[in-house]
Length: 441
Image (tube, rainbow, N blue to C red):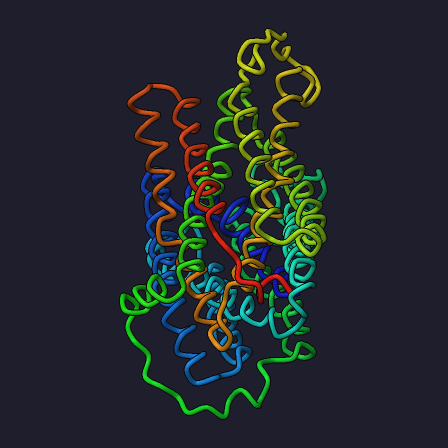
């Protein structure tokens, strides 16, 4: 339920609703708004990346329970989300407060996930870790999708029409002039989190009490921790390096895939919304199925196979333009006034994008499982801190490379293809990872 509880924050606030509102509604200058939002996102992720292994190591050294840490970061997450209600466009001077609130919420969500992930090996045997992780990821995608339907379809009205995305009057009397519907996304995400994270606190067992008998030890700094990781746990370090590369590539594909589709086909809000729903459904199904494959074949083969599928999907997407698919096959472009996704190019794009969606869920879920299998006993939280660190500390690399190559080649297609290089490099390093015999049981 943790994934179900947290995903609306990423779906509603980070991606689809509040972030676009802050840039284009709250901010008088969209360029400045986008820049400030990018800074807040980057600082929040970087702070979480730095703190994750430090706090995880601290908790493991003292054999502390994970739920109190999750509770602490839950409070910060809820406070940060509620602070987004202050984003009234009539008070642009509140921008700094809004950005700080968002940064705190983002950092808290990432750090809470570290301690949640660290609980997994204590809950099920190794042979069931894949199913647990995959089901969690799938639940997250479904929760995010459902929350998007509820908010966009029933609560938030278009300021021009006064109607929701489904063409209905909003269920709550939220003022459109002060953009209360958009601002309500923060408190709604906070309420959703509080309600659905409760089963974790009420019913999920924490670290065994017996493990707390060891006396606490002094924890080294982050640099020392990283050196020790490389020196004493080479396979885990190699996997984290591989994951850092393919996670960067995957993140860049999601960040720029929609931009590429909008550029190629001229898709607007309706098409992009349906496109997002299709991807979310595909990813949820992929994560659920991938969890079962993980338990049967192991996480490493699942990640490798899904990376290959992801590469195929990415190349397929990049092979399409309005009158061409697979780089050479000529097709008729979309006609003016045609139904949604009526052209062959759009349909082919959706097929390849669904491959990306299907692959992305298992990659993320099985990566979490593989980290659990490579973690030494008694250091689970610390190693999931490294896991969070590897996923965030270089998240800028692939987008930066895409931007540079796009500019130098004067081609968005060539620029986005850079992400495939990150996926290939990550796959190559992943194949060198060797699991100890104990991790396969």
